[in-house]
Image 1: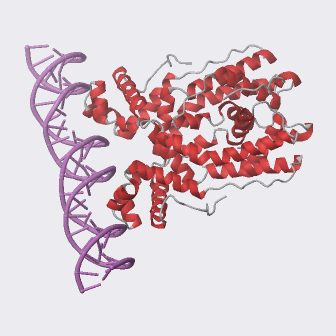
Image 2: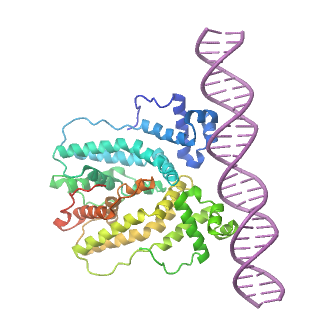
Image 3: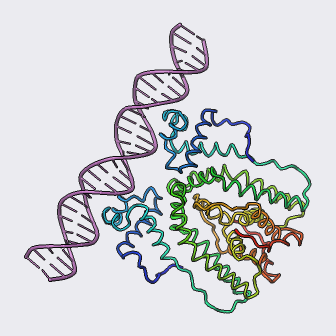
Length: 219
Length: 219
DNA sequence: CAAGAACCGTACCGTACGGTACCTGCAAGG
DNA sequence: CCTTGCAGGTACCGTACGGTACGGTTCTTG
């Protein structure tokens, strides 16, 4: 999930080091703690270098988003044949990964930052964040449910709508609650199983897919 | 949905007027636009009065949340007998109301404010917002699906889990996207129908409930 | 009418931010 | 050796905020 992203033409190693410190400050203290002076002090660089490298504070924030996105990679899915069992497996893995990404410290901090700015900057950072942070995971999920349909294991008319159903079943209001400061789930895997069971009940082609959907589960 | 909330022991009419202006400033310009000087100017009051009434800026924000919550009321559900048809009707009405509330200007602005603060204040406003803003609508939904279960129209073990499933089907990632600055849905009613169809497929006791669930729908 | 409270408008203070300018150290290259 | 460019350190500037103080005005109350 996290690893080297191959080429990083965006920034020099020194700049990446500074961006890492910036993310640390943001995670620890919110956007008020991410000041140019504070970052210069924490990263042992000068404010002048910050402005030379990133232009202004907005440029710094955009660079932080790009830097973080460059660290997150999704598996390139193997081309194995899809069986009902490993479709379910892949869906559950996706669900667990999604929950883990959304509840990560840096993800939450960047989302809080973008949400806070979106009220006044015309949602510039919101777009950036959705673009960089979600495109990968969206495409992975779309490819998966598309393959499920081609293999005759899933049934739906609109892949986009089906994906959003899956997303809603997995996340519900958890993301917003975490953004508001609530702790995450104590068992992501359980939630992943519940969501996939429900999804297969709605869009699977085998009746017994959802046999366990009515088992109870605390949040 | 919106109406007089009976007694409002919290604040005087003059203070409510000021809070209304504060909400307007917040909606129009985000939290940076909500300054004590700006509010005093916009509301034709003095900064000294603001501090006398609300203590400090945090007290003002808390008062704004309480003020807004006092304006939102949910219907007290009538005690009519539940049929499959009007259960579906009530669920769809709930879904439409939920989408409408979440996409409201003031709701979004307050949520953005609370999210922005939650990084550094220990989620004080997040808790306040969830408490004041969601308790009403949560209880309404829980009462509804509970009645559905008692009437033999719904089946589930854990009402809380079922409610979160319903919530996820209705909202998906829409709330976060709107917080990030994306526009809302162009047709809330369509999304409400889709979500309720899916919910009844999962938890309804009649097979034909979900017959239309696979109809496509753009986002 | 007089006394007092409540409130408005404004001036003011300390602070902290974003952003700029200047100086120093240092390593590369002739 | 000297020069050139890059980056760190620091002082500085203008601005805007939260919060306080004070004089003047209106409204209530006895």
